[in-house]
Length: 454
Image (cartoon, rainbow, N blue to C red; front, side):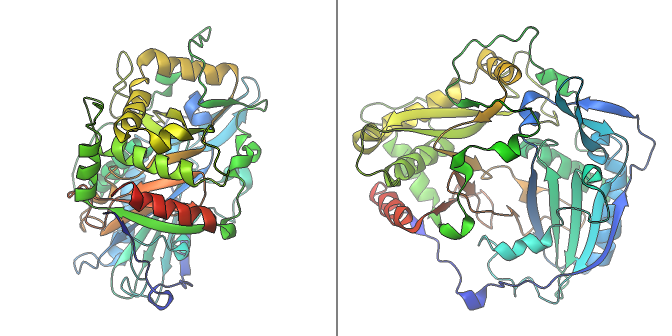
């Protein structure tokens, strides 16, 4: 049960993807927009780094890449009117000591590129190929550091007629849910006379800290940092320091039958949580394997903490609009001693993950936001499970069709484990688990992954 994804042979994967940049420009809102500063919540504040995704499209004779390029440029201009902040620039306001977005309509980046490879040539799209980084433009060299776009699109055409749409955006602009809505709105504007999928809610003050702040929980999942907000990236804790070349990485595949087996196992005995989800059982399984594979000897008294993101939109009172554009996710956590992770019933581990998500009530979320106002800092844990499993980027319908596959550009880190769907999406409830660990730990993780599925 559970299979190790068979990575393509080296000759089947394009290691050195040759990409020729043909043009780069800035796209501006198609209508005048208000000049203003946008408040960023305490959740947004600590996400001042870029996220890259690539969306692969097969050839469509009615929409060759050059036609797609022009349609995307036009659609971007239109969508930048309701998403005016995206054409702005990040700035630090010394008077309040916070990052803000200056809505100055300075534009988003747009890059046109070409490669002589075909989609078939670059190999299995599921495989986290480092060469995919060339399909995303991360910055504009012609612009100063403080004038870099918050959002850049790169359209790379392949010789087969297919193309990739690479997107780099500052994480302060979107979380995964609001990014999908943005893609749906972008796609809608590429159609003739089609309305937005939903009107975005850009009022980030909905997640402002209370005045005065009231921290009503201890928040062991958060780490205090005595640094100015906005400079956190250079002061990340040591757990983030692991050179990529020191890590082995593998993809573990859980079929729908494997997920069903874990769900059944989570029922007990003893009785597990009443609501058992695929995400919770996969998280519990991965947590157990990761904690017990750590290179800390046989110290079963050691505590292990897993972090995972929880969408708080529906948990707040009143709820946030589903079209809220900012980051509306907080880190839930579960903690246990390794002895319990090794010897305890699986149903109890799933229950701890379930309790971690259930802990995220309106008051807990507000307390966490207020904590960020008082202390500043980062989530802290042994590792984070980042789920792209059900975000549904590949379900977005463009005039030229849905993506063949959408994926993050992966930078291997031992403290982050990715969950992502199969090429065919999430219809069959299967999931892939991307793990990056030192070789010895990886060997143990792999053994445990299969052992606990037996």
